Length: 419
Image 1 (cartoon, rainbow, N blue to C red):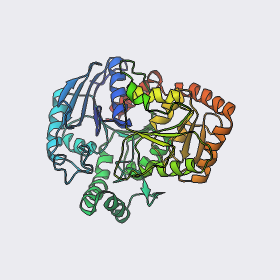
Image 2 (image 1 turned 135 degrees about the vertical axis):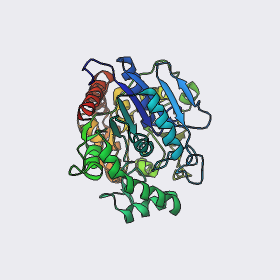
Image 3 (image 1 turned 30 degrees about the vertical axis):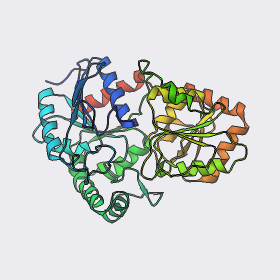
Image 4 (image 1 turned 180 degrees about the vertical axis):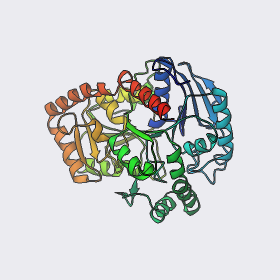
């Protein structure tokens, strides 16, 4: 029997990453699960198992989390990362079996999946009449390296030779060949199985429609729904981490310390300016993180969300200098919610949040001269910096659970009606 508009929906949320792993996609899944439960829906989360994390738990917000082991994730020489267990970009036999058992036991109305676990989910759903909603929180379903960057330029679209070259450079030849073959060979059948695609920005939606859905081959609906923020007041601020911030004014970057995120461009732009306040880079190191940073640049390890928000409050303004076309960029709306002007890049999801000249500044991705000029402008014009920050604070109210969660409910009901 079809669900009525007021009926609760049973949802299995699937995500490659989830807390305690640090990262925007995992936090987004957690926030969506909390919001759905608060609105009366049945929810459970399935994610990849991680060393030291409980295989199963019930969160204080009232939903279960199942961390599912996989055959491939235990083979570290095949994994895309040695720091965390990342599902492969093709069905993992053990993960597929465990997902199928979970779905059959939970009996959801909707399965909503993000990332490379979606490939195992596709196989787990064979023979089950459950609509599948796929999230584009990054470009993992169309790009083996997830960034849409090819030789530091935005890629024009997937093709076997190009993807193999990029992924081999990122992971090595063997892993790169598996990632490229897996994604390019499975994505069409996955697109046909989808009832709906959720993208976090207009840019991500355009790329998913062009390179994944291919409207002539798929009848799936697609919709842009932004990420939303939440002030988790139960989380404790790490005072020791805050004590390591500069005592005086500083410029703040939050995120992975990767070249695709533009940290080398940011450091160069900072170094070009005389008598500039310190630059703080707050985030996790990666294999391509520079081994040396010049004086005036403070590198602090990733910390919890409450501490990040407290750090925004103390900063002059925020910089998000990504080379890649950011799918969205949670750090942007978090900084905006603290009343901070943000320098972001175009093209990408930053354009959905920052109205350049009104709520922040946008510069072309990879343009160190334009970034230098934007930083210099905010430093020399404190009144303008404050005006942009206050407008940003007001604009950030668009990214609230109260406004965004009903859009997910509408998307689920649309997927159910199409099914």
